[in-house]
Image (cartoon, rainbow, N blue to C red; front, side):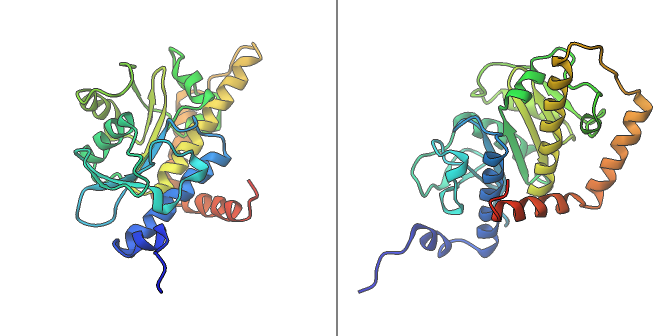
Length: 254
């Protein structure tokens, strides 16, 4: 007598290999975020476009913590919010749909969107002057960082156009009084951007906590540093960063 298929096997039977690989990579990204303490329990979200012709993206099921997300539990949704595949039956965070679908629709070349509510990210998001050029990590975003004013919980569809307009063609956004958002042509690029933005925010709060006067790096030096990071993105050297983190994840070494 043949037993019932495991949920992962059942899902794999009805999707492409490319989608399964995307699901696996996105689940790994959630696990990395959990290890790095980039989570707000069940309340933030990462998304990844599904490979293929249809404009679908994957996002976490609403109610799962980042460490329990698996390739087979991710929800597939279209740009209009219709659930295509929801193995857990939990649905998705409505605010996650509003934010992520807006960017995926406006920028089809952007395959990954990551959003966090970390203490450091919110701390900098609450500061009038935003991210300061006081660390090498912050200079990754010199004149390459957008801001979006807080409008309340992101549930109103008409806010989508303002999020997209504020982000423009950049890949990093501070949602004022809310948190951080990064994106990229692939998941690895978006993760690299989020790593640097989170680290820059942690460094800023640490520097400010000492109470001493801060040294702001001059514009020309900040631009010089930012161009080095641009070159790393252009040549996809961020893949080295991602691969090293995956090796650590597999060794349970984080």
